[in-house]
Length: 142
Image 1: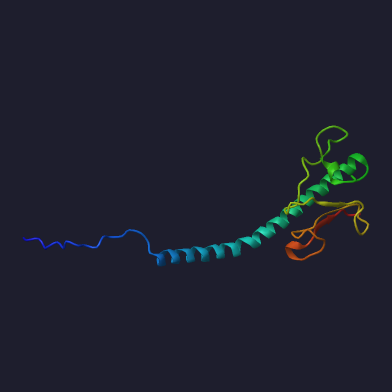
Image 2: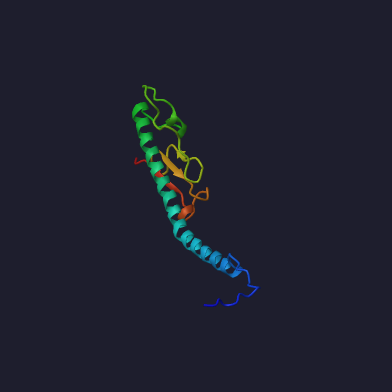
């Protein structure tokens, strides 16, 4: 059986992607990233607020332990990280910062006749605010 004639000039085959194919892939990746960010960012704000509430509760318990040992509340949160006078470790291992990287605020006495008030100023770092910028606080019961 005779072979078909081979043309002497065949177009070379190019491997790779065209510019249009690359642009379509980039647009799809961008859309997926946008959908993920829209769903993840609100969860991060909620987690930071929850962490601040947990830290404040832990510091409140340490304040009460300090009062039981010393018959008064400490003048500052730094006193909670000092060794106990009766021996043993500190009331807290180390003072945490709020989730936004600022120190927690302590007021002794607190507002409304409470013995103390521990607060984080929220994401914006200023008093007041709403949503993630709202202050997070816990006062001891009088």
